[in-house]
Image (cartoon, rainbow, N blue to C red; front, side, top):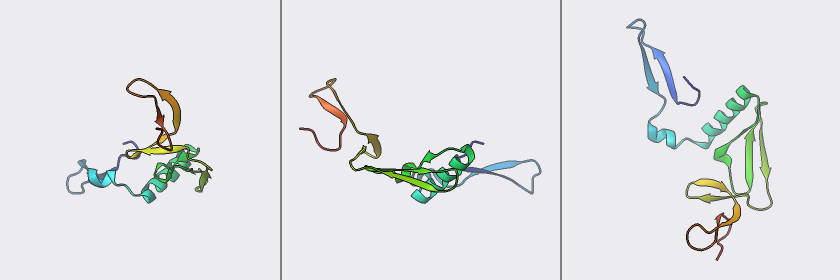
Length: 114
């Protein structure tokens, strides 16, 4: 079973050899995972993969946080925004213009372009 599925296997002691799968939380609870869970998961993955892993729940317009294999967190901060929240997703700022539909507009900008 892959890591991060939110499922756990347990054997039923009454019926030998039978196994049942139980989810750790309902689907709605999974979608509302706390930032602490995300940090813990990133720290675990960083340790297992021996590389730094971005902690997506800690993203902001001006910072990026990584979980390090040593168990520490590293945050890089920037003087200006490097990403913009579009809906519920952070997107890197992209000021290249596209004219596919309507007026020329950037894909993602930190400010409204009029």
